[in-house]
Image 1 (tube, rainbow, N blue to C red):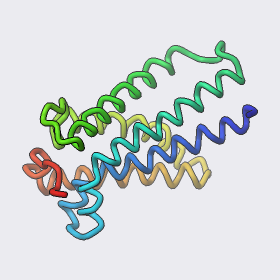
Image 2: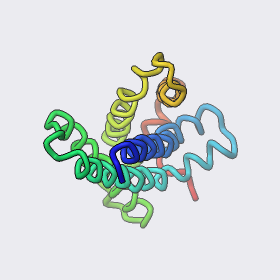
Image 3: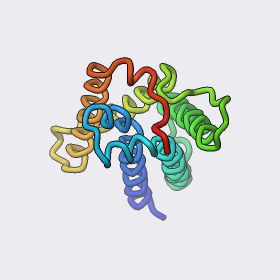
Length: 176
């Protein structure tokens, strides 16, 4: 693969991960704000979305490695590796907790609806939003779409927290 193809793959895998992330990020809030078949389905499958985030972002990581193999590792900057690496760690930690919950284990270190899980999801949202939101006005339709989607997702999550603070704080998995 050449540099241009790898850049395209990087953009595609980042956007794909973001779409899956939005499903996990807004699921419970959407269910609480607008109960219905779709929002209940989204909330019930939240852990699967979290596992999907990790899987999809692993593809993104493979594309990053391939990209730097083509352009040269000397182009890699520490100030991009540090926050990116930390984000990968929290994504994988979230995925491990989701897998533990899906397997029925009670010792998951992130409980659904816990403050730490909420913090991690908001951190991941911030990473994506910092890539998409500033580019809304750039004129590229893809960036505008994903930037607006990031803002809408945050709005839904805040509205869910404001309208149902006790539900968001203590919401467990919706029964399967």
